[in-house]
Image (cartoon, rainbow, N blue to C red):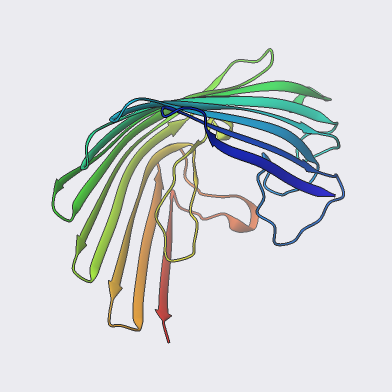
Length: 270
């Protein structure tokens, strides 16, 4: 069986509440589901989510959530039944329609395999992340976003792995043309302290890459409406690493410290 249930409610004019309960049996298989879950699939999980938002006044809001989850059977990189919880706090300030600032703190506790010597055991882990973000418009059609994000990941009884990313985005909209770009500087101790930052992509594509190692990431996305029926997208992205000579491993390895991606998409509407 698989089930999801919840509610959204305004308790007062200033307080909003969200509650979600979910349960997916360990042998529940649904090929096209996109349900509420901690894992990437709706399987082998039960959980309860509580979210609150408080509007201090029209321009300032404070919100957060707490989520508890349980995995009744083994999962990827966890060789026994496990559980965990995470919580998030966010403050958002919007002085006007062209400007918005927000700060986020997120902490997550899970269990994961850890190999020490020849012994492997399941131990607790803690991931903490912080983010400061600013959205603003310099002029009509030109908007910018600046973001700094950092955090750490720790296995119980081990030293922490730390990482950060600095991001500058720009979007220009002019008649039928839209151009978006990014420059990001990142550095992490290893893959455990990777940083996730959303990227704009071609239509119907979702890009949320992990930034890890040390280097620079940049991309450019161009969208052009040719006419009433035809839209065209072109996306170019490149990652340059400064702390190693190759990218990837095994059959995916690139014998250079950089990786380039190109996407072209067209849509014809009848």
